[in-house]
Length: 439
Ligand SMILES: *Cc1c(COP(=O)(O)O)cnc(C)c1O
Image (cartoon, rainbow, N blue to C red):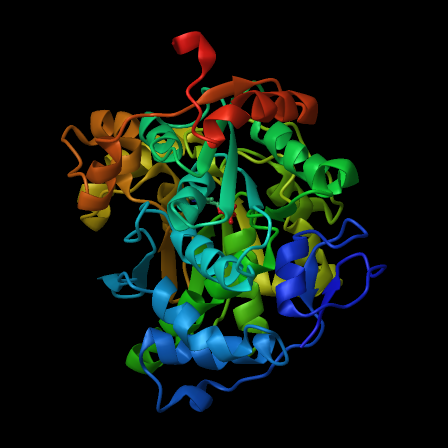
């Protein structure tokens, strides 16, 4: 299997090369060249998440260096529960927040980390993993790569725009994880990573890997839970479910579209967005336009120019077909608040602000069998959630462990030069020499 660029002017490459490249050389994003096709009945004898995962991912690894290791990569990745819970007759919730950093991104980040670690030859120079984060990506990536020998992690997040507990999950690591609070927006952080990836001078003495959702190594494994939950729902209820997905950069949603494309029993897909308008505007007008990022309560979805839109457009060159399969709903901060406040009485659940956008979309829509995708644990957003529900959200054990650790953080301006300068100034610590001024 080969992966091609959405912009069609780069060579087709195998999985491992697409993963290490991150972006294709022409600036596009990697997408599979062909689509394996499945029928729901192909999975009749398979019920575990691992078995389903192996079946749907195997074709993408065929001929690749990692082909023979897929099973063990999956075993190291999927070691936490991903429950599908029934709520009311036609609605269920897929809880993606039981991983080490309580966000759906743990699945993709851990898979990516397993792949990078296995691709690195012993004795090779340091590999640098870079990630821009508007909330949960950085924590999941840091957790997934923390302590891996020969790999350093650089995390960039927009200062002051994420929750205190999210920030803690970015900054509690130390060791091979370096975290930078950038004076700017998430889009500034994302631009910085893209600039670094294109800076041949900086790249020349390191292997630089982007861990954002543009990376194929994070996207592919996200298909696993769409495949498994849609099959489970279809078998138990006899209907194809439709998914409502809290969306920002559209990485999670693209994985659901790919699973649908391959023939898994998925009916409609709804992109639940916050008040950042680029996606809903596109669905209204058919013309793609990016917007300045707006700050909302669902901060991990504060994206003005979602990078995975390029993959959506590549999958759906025909706007009519796109609108048939997919729709987009925008949810304001006021609606997020009221959805969280009414969570107990309407659904007997506590929602995080991101998941609340999907719940609100569900409350507006009818006529399908719905799976709401819950992307983060509400305890990560206690300062928003607790005043609205009037009680404390119990903190899961994984989160408490991270909250108890000290923070390591540095601030920079949103330029590659600022990042380079800061990195060279902290180089002595990397070699564990005591800084002279502290003598
Ligand atoms: C990242 C994130 C999202 C948005 O996911 P995308 O793949 O960027 O669309 C939604 N909710 C939470 C909690 C997240 O961390």
